[in-house]
Length: 210
Image 1 (cartoon, rainbow, N blue to C red):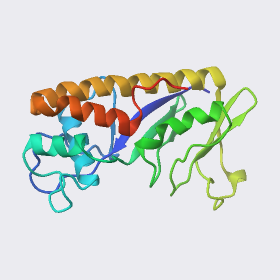
Image 2: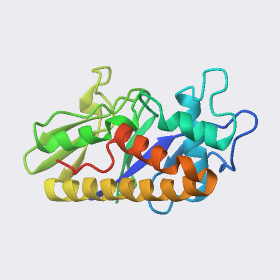
Image 3: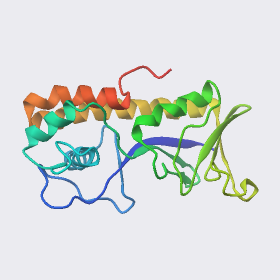
């Protein structure tokens, strides 16, 4: 079986005005981060990032002048956002990041090829993964022991194919970082570099994939 890994962020419908144009929330509630992410989708991701992290303040999260919001994001001590890597197979099976899974932990997928440790993939359902001979096995549920694994059908990916898919996901995230810089430069030029650097550090974008 073959599969792809896509970088996604969970988003919610903004309440009230937004500092810049934003895209509608997709039916599945997720946006892909890659070279093809359009400007209004980037706007929705950044607005949600600000709101989720209560920036520039808890009372005014995601509100204010564009430069003020981007400056608050760039200066944040830490940034987190729901999301991660979305696995889709050629047979149409999907394993999505579950509740409480964050984009900041996406590199945990790489540990599968090092020590076999499963990344945290969330709950309700609770997917998990393991290293098996010749590759990686991903389970759609059962990571918290609340489901009989005998009733589940895992997804097996050959090691080389999994590594290639992970590499492509990393390339997508780096391409999104470049798009983020272009978008920010058009919104608030003086804050673009700081925003890109903070996003890079928060979500481990530029560092080589170990």
